[in-house]
Image (cartoon, rainbow, N blue to C red; front, side):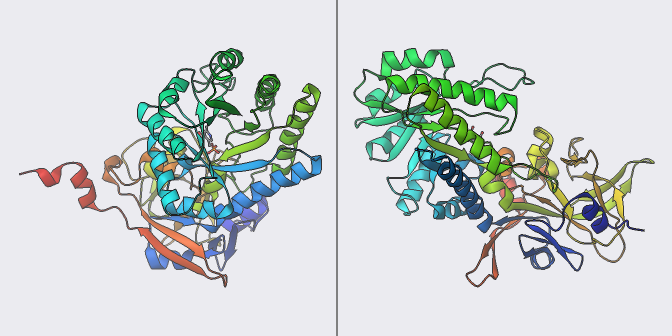
Length: 466
Ligand SMILES: Cc1ncc(COP(=O)(O)O)c(C=O)c1O
């Protein structure tokens, strides 16, 4: 009978597949022997496989350059990394090896830009696209960089924002305008709270920018929360934004860039299917045909891919501490950390990640619920992107079962907070960085140990108790 975990996977998906392979019943992730890693560092553990970040960037750049070459598209492509998806220095360091640009979303992001510049990771030619609703501190910092000659593009979230730069920015400055997209039909609200309404962009430009010698409208920006997907909603929003671009381009020669935001999908299941080549080609084709019909030059295309850049570099590895049978059908695998705090998107917005056992692939499978250590009812995981169930190998008495959640490298630490206080004081796992050497071997570095009790008690003020 074929009922091992490996059988199940091979019957359900093409396996092995990019990034995942099994040797001697142990999982390898991007060629990393997880057995060795667990033996050296133990669990719970978070890993970041840095080369994946460069691979993803190169993949996107190739997709866009192939589509542009094929269609003889006249604009250029600029890859920006959206720093909010993971602010770690090691992530930026790796990403910036690939001749890319950056997108910021808050005041402190600008301090990261300054650090990167001082450490020669970027130059003043690197585009810094500044998004978000700007606080006073954020506009001050943006203005400072503009005055220092950085290639900065503040993207106006609202009409009032321009006034903030009027007095503060001395030099000429290029600006962008964010178009407020319509939300997807199933969302509670109609229009994004970010950006300026389609219908108000032209009059705002004519009244405040066109006649202003200091500011040049260089970029229109739009971002669709549900991501770059082949559905009516996406194509509809792209069409509307292109209409605005063409209308504005006719009255503004400085407008040379269309920023299509982030939202490039990430593999969240071994059964993930997304035709990246088709989507990029269709987007470029649509931009080009619309511009040709309207008789305006094609814009340079900017993207701000966050998850796509960094998600697939990350994984969380846990031990199953115990099995609990709570009624006839509900069996729990209790793991050695909290899912809610290590992967908050799983409960907060129902994101799915690739869940696989690390060992025991020749063991029999059973349906389980994976339970986290916090007391919260929602600290569990029991459905995958392709099915509303989770199957894992049976436990046995010979050795512990280890499991991994893969492609968890984007947003998780910034949503739950890295370090700091955690639900039920369950500490952040240790964090291991993995790099590939020139000879193909791997090197491991412990970026952070498991969070200590002292660090938590200090935040909570216990060190000040008399
Ligand atoms: C303006 C903007 N650009 C880019 C991104 C990155 O999106 P993703 O991580 O889906 O690529 C976001 C995410 O919220 C965003 O708000």
